Length: 215
Length: 184
Image (cartoon, rainbow over all chains, first blue to last red; front, side, top):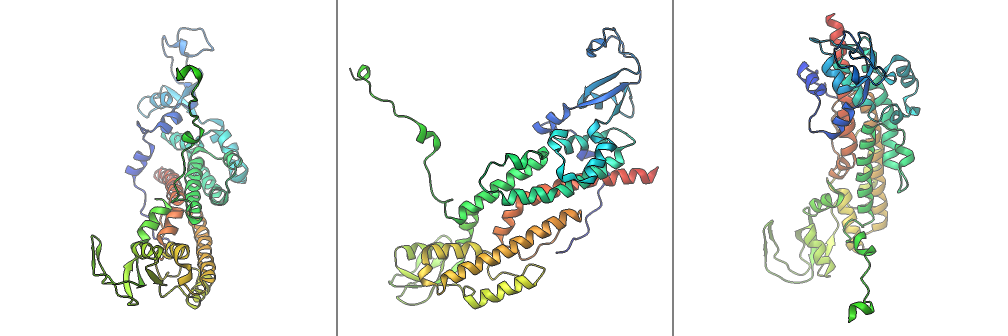
């Protein structure tokens, strides 16, 4: 097998990668994830946003957990009302755990969409963005083998144990591979061209004639 | 794509049959077949051959490659080579399965052939998995895989496309970080 030279990635591609997708439900869910923000200036009359304070204004240096979509709007190059911190699981201590052995990590616990939120964090300028980019890529690569093997070899058993620790993207890959392999196995034993009665019909009970109905 | 859809495509391959009836040419949309004369070898699409066989109107001649010696050589070659060997037919898995199901008595050493084909398919699948793993590890975004059959490609399609997609996204982000670091 040969690996032809990949075309170098271009700046345009980066921007399309980072854009939020308006019509993608998964993307909308990821945008709800909370990011810790520190306010850089006083914001008047919005104190009610912070449930922990009863002041009228948001003070400078106030810390607050804001959803990603709000943080993104407040922290741009032109207008820096807040500065953001990466969530714990994207900081160097957690990245070290990933680097040590990504296979044993329960990524679903770290964040159901660990990779996707990670990708989104590159919209913010942050000192730790470089190690994060490396960490995410390495983690995905080293976990891929496990995803591939378990999805191709799992028998018709409960796959919950296998997918429990996978991130949403890995689960999606697992699920579609699983379906594909099952379809192939069904074809191999000659079951795919047999028609079967639908569950709904099988479990449907005929109405019985009762004496009341007959009359 | 589902396995039975690929089987449907495989049914268009041509096989040779020995009919036991006479009939003039039949004009079909996909092409004309016949004329049929008893014991005169005739080329037919596989789906028609299977239909005739099921009505016991013909005997199917196995394709040239479907014999024990050829397949054993093929298996050996596949075993020795690190790359994928060209297969005699792009639909070898499907054709074998179809013929074994309806015309096993027309094929000499049918059981042996079935096992050999299964072995070859397994060998290739193992090789494929190994190269997929290598591919992701090498951070390749594309690769050349020659001589794969349609069924094999279909088996890895969802896994490989999605995994490569995701690894490429992460790679782009990393490249960008490196470029940013370079400009500073």
